[in-house]
Image (tube, rainbow, N blue to C red; front, top):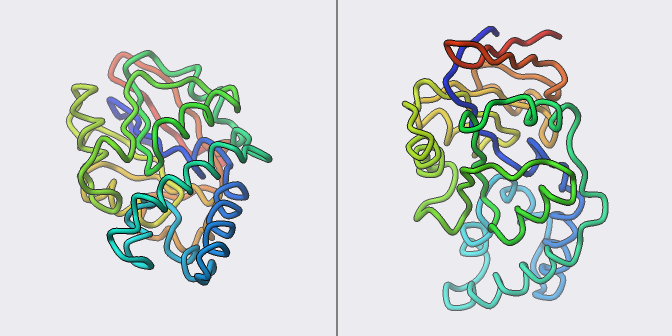
Length: 215
């Protein structure tokens, strides 16, 4: 793939940051406390807002308390949270205002996660609190493109989860799947797929950002 885009919209967990172990520990701890099958939750939770996952397993009036407990667990567990390969160099090379992050996580969890891993916090960061509808709905990606002042069709969405890939496609963007949390065969809806972002080169140019798969 060789693409010139006006902006790049990154997911965070599994795309910029490897927090999979921490996230899974959080869900398993909470599920154990509630007597719920953690594996059933984890089969559908990646790339989605916690509240959207919870409503499938508990009554609506219990979601607020469950969110508070999940947030406590997530904030206190940062063991093993690291930047994924290539991400630091990529983000620091992109011009200001040319990229954003769109996450299913909450701001008070995501900002510390970026800082812990030494990654820059983007000027435009769309979190779960900023949207009415989480991924696979395109609302978050449309909001990020709007805040950057870029047509979604001129954006590249980079995602690791099928729900996020569907959100990017629904927004009308080009989508690159990174197989950092899912098998590459699970990302077939994306326009292109790589094992991680070290396989890509991002070059700022007068006409935008040139993105090339080099591996």
